[in-house]
Length: 336
Image 1 (cartoon, rainbow, N blue to C red):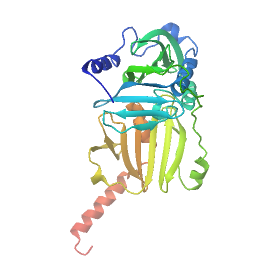
Image 2: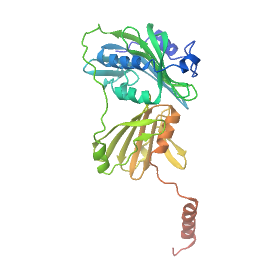
Image 3: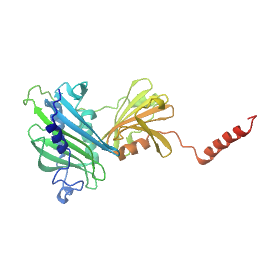
Image 4: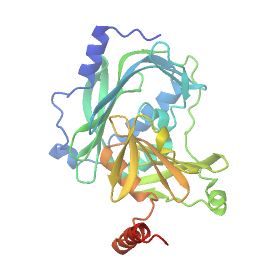
């Protein structure tokens, strides 16, 4: 059961607030010249996140154009079983393998770290603190030296205690932090950690079945998963090593009358529907299919990914004028 007092809530807010002494996005000069000094620390933390038993409370916030969405999660990792999460004292318990994107900010998968190494540099910044525990801070740097993400790694258990994802402007767009954490005794229940990788073995069959989808999306997003769980339904997963964009494609038409809580937006002449204030859920129809995107990524990355996926072609000017003339003639001509 989650026991979140006012004190813990305020502590969570402080945990996810600005950190003194850490620049918003610019890398210090010595850091910009360093090599990948922190990648091995992240790999060790990922292994610890799968092999070490622990429980605690996490505070997670995502910032979007219209505001922030926050949640408090109770988490419990049982090695060999998986990561169990629950939102609220009466919420259902959900399983999420910490080696998959569902638990990526707690324990990145081997695939995500491989992609991250291709797209970014990871540097060891030095000692710090998170969740009241000594930690090691690592920064993930873009090619231009700006900070794309920060990770605070527990000195004792190796787990990721806190993480932040930043957009190109240096603003934090996603943050997660433990507000309390209990580690199981070392060795208790521990099992060898698997790589947690993803196979794309179904891709040839999906292509042969007539599915068409990109292997990459803007923002250096790479396809890591593709499978269909039922006829006419396809799941695609993309990641740049930090963010995850999930795409669901289903045969059929979009029933807009049932989109309660969604609002329509026009993007390059196309109509898409968006839900939640962080703008991370998007749905639209194209070519006899309904596309749904769920993302744990900066808004600009989500927008670019959505724009790169199929949309109904926008009629050109002469086509639109022709349709208007036909409607006008049918109205004035009683024999039409």
